[in-house]
Length: 396
Ligand code: 3PG
Ligand code: MG
Image 1 (tube, helix red, strand yellow):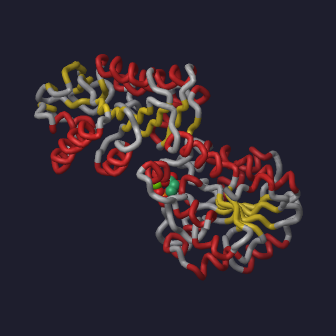
Image 2: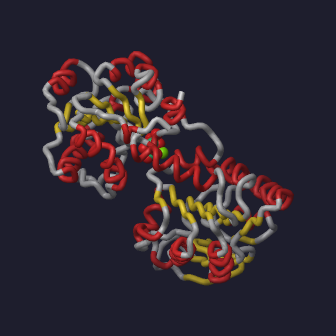
Image 3: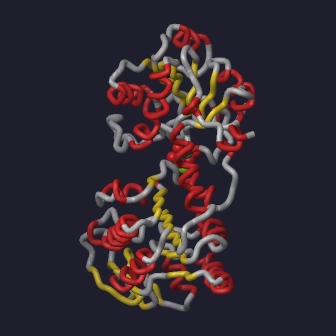
């Protein structure tokens, strides 16, 4: 891989695409700065070399040009605190004023550009816009794994204008290396844990993982569609009625391919979707009328934990239940704990996806897994076996 690590960047204007799409509260305080922290090694490398870091990112999904709540200004301030230098901010990401801001930079300086998505051309992958961005710098670095699955102007098209001067940032390089460790020559047994509310976004991932893993654990809301497929009663649990047949066929495919498909056998149920609802436990195929399943039960936890502890490679995307509510967090917490234990015993574990990463942090497991990805959608695309436009653009 064309990695930035060994490239001398003294005096160079280095345009770094990062993914600073971080959650903010209504006062623009950053709720979770992991993605910013994760980009620091690349920025520090450019600073130490005496290069000029020009940082570009999107934030949110603005649709009508400038909107204060999507301004990267709030992020630039935080980056100043993290780097302990005064980070500059340019009110635009292209055009004359931005060029002036860049001309005023000194070696080692860092400048954050305004949100790329204030221009619709960004998401459209517009070549003229990409060219305008490219004019700002001598070198292009992509360190934005979280958005590497998008073929946008700043993530992919722009690379055309830096034929011999495009590199992977340190973060993007680590992300891909971690995914390759898990997927290319995994130490076996290899177990994938897929959770979350819906099957819909994850069918292709599940199907593709059947060709790679020894065991696949399914939890979260999507497990109830499988329970229905097995002819169970699931009360008011979440179900994708149009996916029941598909769930049936996934069970059959797993069998044919010799993959151990582990579905929850029991369920923690509530009579309302809140933490103070009445709770009861049942088999997952016997959820009483008036109740909905919100977490995996004790027997499932035991069964899943055993498979996890036997594994040498583990990937996890999606929680086991509604972990945001204390009473339905046990499944996610115990599965997280099993992954930590397996890691301690020598397994390689990779966690991705906004919810699972939030859970890992909430339960204090962040230092106990092998790698936490900054990507959700991008990781899923990679797991499907798809090429990521942001990665291909540098490799080409
Ligand atoms: C994300 O958080 O999913 C990435 O930053 C990409 O953002 P997007 O889903 O709006 O393209
Ligand atoms: Mg997304």
